Length: 153
Image (cartoon, rainbow, N blue to C red):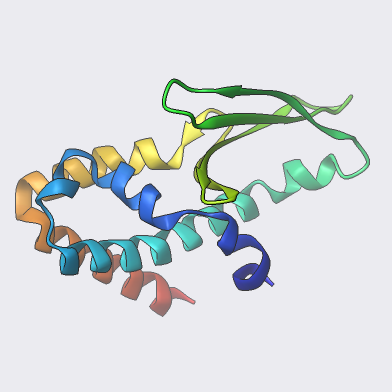
């Protein structure tokens, strides 16, 4: 279900480009393809872990109405959609989607949960890793993280 319904709604190419930042233009087409492939795998696990770690908060709102509080456009044409899950018994849960038009559809290019952007967090760590060991080192690091995550299951 995740592969068919959820993942097609994400633009992993743009997400990777945003996370790699200024180094993206230095990567070869082969490196870009490897970065996208490995980052996609890592993001799927990160988003899954984020959602599962917060599932109790979201589940506690199952009888509450989730509403889109606002949507706005950024200067580059991205849409920001904020969804707040209100409850009488706990703090509101805020989920923010940054979306970009991709042909005839909108695709998610970042997710912030409780004020934490996954892309911004990854950009900081990617910048450190690429500065230290280059783009190939970043790819190797992603491969190793994905291998470790797979072995933990």
